[in-house]
Image 1 (cartoon, rainbow, N blue to C red):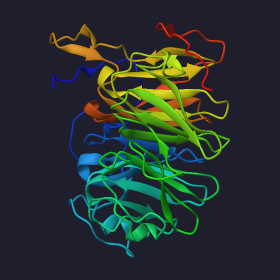
Image 2: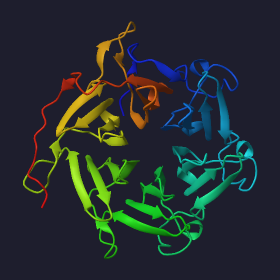
Image 3: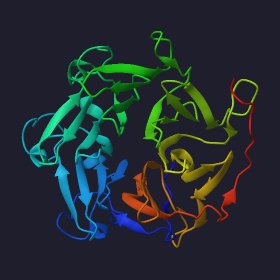
Image 4: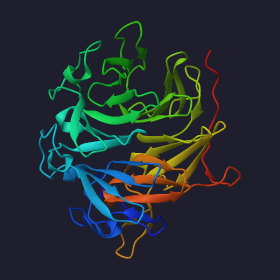
Length: 354
């Protein structure tokens, strides 16, 4: 891997001073240290939650800009269920999601679990028995095996969806805690949509209609799934040809996705250091060039983003939050109006899916 581009001055920072490490709890978030933040979420009150990946913590930035730890004691491990989340141990939390009841869900990558921090601050496991693997469909999610959970999203009806990077599948946990597979790389059963190879789900989002969006990092695609319509290719490097529908977009590794109330979709292309906007069959670059641009003062490459991963829409503040992984910060991108122009990349519409 080449050296990551250094941060440009174009995007405001919400959290992280740009230096890797752990520091700053109780103080200003923009002066705090994060270590490869990989996921971000925001609640209705404007609190921003960050999966501070290499610090084995989840942190919160309140609307006044103060940062605190909400889960993880900073030591890699697996334990603490039933107790205070700040004293629990996490193993590289990679993504974070919220529901409407004050729960924080954590995709804990290397413990192969999904953890939940409730409104009282207590932590528990909602999926995964802690051993890596597959299986368990039709039974309790806490007894199932997960294989590198790397994304999680909560639906309005109480369901959870979990992406497994190692298992190359998306699992669903219903309101009763029962787990099933809804999308997989290869056929697993009559009710499982087949994504085909290669398929590594790296980011998840849900729209107002309850449809699930999947950023497929290895297949370089954006997929959409729902129970009635099945699986659809919306965009990607191989879209628009005779075998698929959607918009042709030259993505390198789409790893994060967010969708607004109007159906506009945002995708973080991690390896191209960029964020894209999809609306009305057109794909545009919202921020971050496809290649690092402009030498810095020290002669090194400089870019607005470096390996962006998780995305979160803050509709009230009209901004998109980006986990700017190799810049060790959460960046802020102002959302354009529907009529505002953005830099365009060629995109070709493919035939409609029958």
